[in-house]
Amino acid sequence: MSRVARLWSTERAGGTKEPGSRLAPLIYLVAGEPSGDRLGAALMHALRAELPELRFAGLGGREMAAAGLEPLFDIRALSVMGLTEVVPRLPRILGLMKRVVRDALAAEPDVLVTIDSPSFTLRVARRVRRRRPSLPVVHYVAPSVWAWRPGRAARMAAHVDHVLALLPFEPPYMEEAGMGCDFVGHPVAERPAPAPEAGARYRAELGLRPGQPLVLMAPGSRPGEVRRLLPLFRRTVEALAAERPGLAVVVPLAETVADLVERRLRRMTPRPHFVRPEAGEHQKWLAMAAADVALVASGTVVLELAAVGTPMVACYRASPVTAAMVRRMLRVKSANLVNLVSDSRVVPEFYQERARQHLVEPALAELLDDETARERQRAAMRSVMATLGGGSVPPSARAARAVLRVLAAARAADEDG
Image (cartoon, rainbow, N blue to C red; front, top):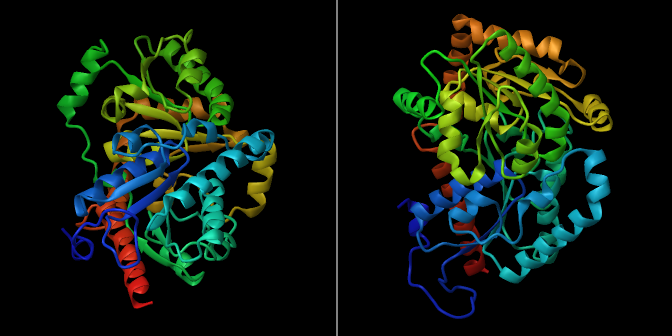
């Protein structure tokens, strides 16, 4: 148990929470999409390791539910991105947001932890703080103000006390805006990659013979991403398979789009091996480690593949309206975290009008055929994982201890008051 956790491990009290009582703290977590769900689950496990009596409430997905959270509703209802997708569903999204705010206020938590998805979670934080100005608020995953819209940091400082940053260069941006900030690293960096023999066993379970190429496809976790990218991914991989008899495909399915992706790839040649979300994160991890190369939508999956050392090509397409808005504000040349953290262009990336088969297919073919190209990526991935590991303490433990420090400071302030 850490020193911070010991501040909380005193006698338990029953009944209604009173100022100065030692009722086990309640942490209200809000995650709006699968990547946040994974971060939230890792944080919950780490918090419980520090302080087993902690209580949790809020919004999350399958993994946070497995960690002990009873989610308020299905986060798939929030899986939209971009102006043209959000606007038609805005009344429903606002209704869900009000529901989360009401529930958070009724729960009377000791701290509110919002996780990624800033367009949703930070609006929840603002509305909750308006009603409970003294409630400590921690935001997990610093918005990428270094990439675009730098003014967001100053705006969020009005209702966020502390930020948990995944990238080492982010704290100064948050601190300059008036928030506390810890670089905690990324939890994906603390997860050990499957052993080579585990990947070999997984390939055998799929019925692959030794040396048979396996391509992983990950077209995103939002319906809009899937609709814009999946046709490109399918055409690209089918073209590669036509030139390479025996090429196999595996597709991990995000919970929010599983049925959509499976339906649209049912008649693909070669027929994909699907990894359903209910199979568990371990099966997805094995699939990523077993693949020779991957074709992915830029996002958290990029770091997951980097953690297991699988070379990749990354793509992204936003709606034309969203893309035009982002381009005017963009301050970086890459949207790929492996490239950003390694300050390189080692992962081929194709965005918007460059996400076309005649560009993507040769890049993926080179990775399949050239071991030197694959090893170049793996070397950069090892460096990125070392950077994002955050030191000797695992990232999720660093994040948990930062949350407990905020809790302890709030409790001390209440008692002094």
